[in-house]
Image 1: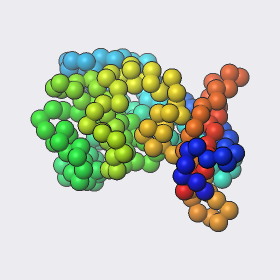
Image 2: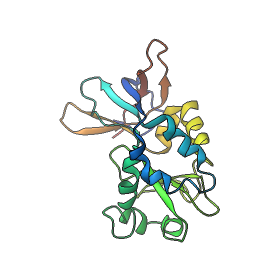
Image 3: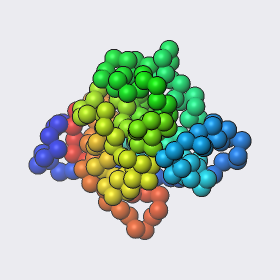
Length: 212
């Protein structure tokens, strides 16, 4: 297995599934209604008027792929409880408290965690107050770039960035494809390109070089 994305090794083709979750009933949006008067978050709220989350990059083939979602935007009803995990005293509070992201998340500005990367604890957050209101950040316990700066200035620009190059976004947030090797151990594979299958709206392909 190689860590180098520029390896000459032949890429592995992985079939993935993407899906939008249908809109839920209004009772599931109670928490979202509490932020409806905040500035710069309307695009985020507009999404939930049409859908109730999405799942991107769930491997379905080959058989040795671990069937975990690369990026999952939570349902409206789940956002509040998901966010509480990262607040002081929550089971994932250490994700913030033991790295430099504490500087922005433990201040006075409110934020929500709304999308899980892989099986966590990495996630996407959006500030709903202050100078960063509406901006999207990556929250991860092992930052590999300056996560004090947003990955997108708005929710729409986040979707545009993902749609422009899904594989590049997966690399940015370290949403690796996990596959079981012949030795029975799991190995992470780094997405290098997204192959759009125009014949299917739900099943696409990602080419990946092997890394440990």
